[in-house]
Length: 487
Ligand SMILES: Cc1cc2nc3c(=O)[nH]c(=O)nc-3n(C[C@H](O)[C@H](O)[C@H](O)COP(=O)(O)OP(=O)(O)OC[C@H]3O[C@@H](n4cnc5c(N)ncnc54)[C@H](O)[C@@H]3O)c2cc1C
Image (cartoon, rainbow, N blue to C red):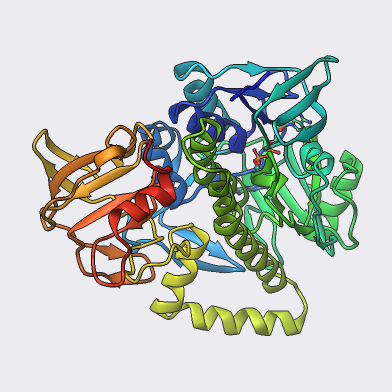
């Protein structure tokens, strides 16, 4: 039996966004999720970066997250605060919002509004793939024959292991205790060697508090500490345990850093934590997973429908693996910068001095917030491969913005009035053509001002695939590469 169905293993942030992207692009998708509901244990991710807010704007749901969180115009990098205020984006800030809230809003959108089906209290326990599909073995004893399986099932991914995808990298060198617990008037704020104490409810303040403490010896993440161990660690760090009591949740995390050797093995793919794990410094994990999902969804939908060749899926690894590798690199660097001995303190001071300069600060802030990503798509114009800026546009239907034209997750050809005879021909049912004018400015993170293009082809993930001009391929070639040959 031939099938076009895609199973997404794991309904965390990555799996939910991937399911939405597949659904919007017309694929038949089912999420299989171990948890009985969307409750998140502990705090985990604490915020959304600028690029994630942009990709959520692309689907018309960014406002829901902004309304629930608090914006902060700075982010931390290895002990240095970096201003985001001059990043050319509608979101020059970090949005503070706990993962539990992020997942609740995502689930309302994806499972509620879009109606994507989910099998809860159900796990993927094994798989077997051949040239025609994947047999997905579920914990209820059934097997589902599907066209593709994507493992969004977290750092210990069953899918990754069952597909035989290697996960090379570094074991933990440092571990931290993390807890939510009642405390009497604790010393609030970050500690120079990393970690610190802050209220879980950032607006109301007070107990329970979130506590993160570096441990003197590395312990494995799978062994949660006891309340007594937490009290002892507080006494070591602060000279008092602040009367720690009523733990809501105690856990530990490490700086283990690993990345899948390949993001695709035949008809099985991995995304999010299933593809990369790293220390949480800089708060990038959830964000990078969401952006993996936005890169993969439209490609997999086109391939599953038979509209584009399977080779399109190779661009997922080619584009996202280097981004993940860079996150591993910068999080390892941040752990090193936060190390407490004299030599690391000297290194931290030197980096601090460099990051006080505008150019390095802007670059590092754009990297951590995901705004600097450029996929190598060929072409000479600096826009190609970078994210489309969310420009104000005038169209025949009235004013709009570039990202608002991507709400339906279809590719977009923007004719900015400078090219005669732009014609989508046989791609006109796959790609939306909009004639518009814009006052600009075409100002890109890290790059600065770029020459305004006469037209721009934007992929559903918001990255520019083509602009006209010398050194650029013909439009038809770009359309074939990204959205399949003419029917
Ligand atoms: C202490 C800590 C602090 C963090 N801070 C930040 C931060 O500030 N910012 C940030 O961006 N990130 C942060 N992260 C990382 C962030 O939590 C993860 O990167 C993010 O949750 C990854 O999302 P995911 O959907 O890829 O994986 P997960 O959130 O792990 O979701 C995987 C899902 O798959 C399900 N599942 C697992 N196995 C199976 C199976 N076999 N079958 C079916 N379902 C399965 C799980 O129940 C889960 O719902 C932090 C993490 C920790 C631990």
